[in-house]
Image 1: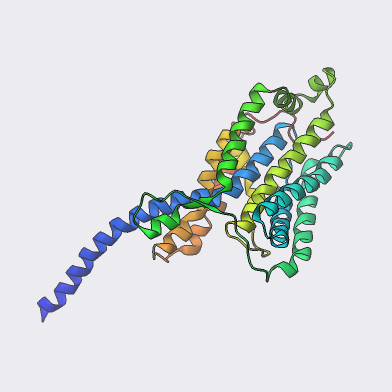
Image 2: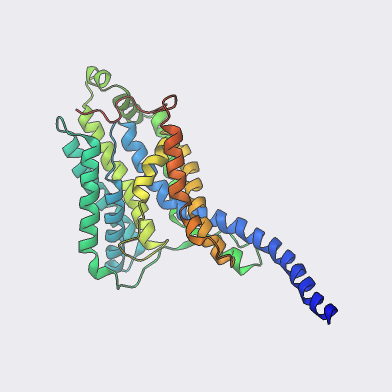
Length: 324
């Protein structure tokens, strides 16, 4: 009887070892694919905030831009039955809403941070109110790029289905990085962000450069909103963003205001955000909600580290956060 009891236990341990190896392999690819999937909205929003802050302006209203763009993209995609029209709609609304922030902040004695919070509340409230009838609509999704064709595992193939917007985000990253260093417009943005007095002495309109930068940043962030509603998690509901627009501000600080670093940081945050779903898809359900909190914990850690007196705003544009 004892031997009969021992055999299944031994078999379970043997099977567990084989499954552990398979599970670890799947988790690696699942977290990698999840980092791209979850990190794509982070990438676009952080790039939008990066170009805005490079000009010396902070836009905390990007959370409102993200939510409003996600709702608009979902509505436009359903109306035209085209996800790409939804992406265009999200980018346009993101740019238009950022125009409000940029135009008001161009007036004297207006604080960027206070105005950003007001725009955030306005965007979220408008999206929730206008988007109520959209909650019941069927989701229209963007096409996927499959990077798992090399694998025989259906799970790995599914895990490596990535957002088609991700390569576009990489292209924007490279263009911004090159443009800041090698184009007249990029140098104007950097000059306005580092010294508005020097820019004025050169005959540059500081407010105009900052307004255009804010609008472009809002449009790029709007693509991130479209990614949320048209790819992952998909659909429209009031909890879609989960504060990603605010996290992006910390992400830009972590990236030291460099577009290529924004790409790396977005993948780090995306990987942290994909841990919970990846573990759950592998059949590991313990501490699911704890792992889902990792991106927010990571945000706090980054803010604490980067806001230390000896590191505070190192590499930041000198005009950042100053009132007109």
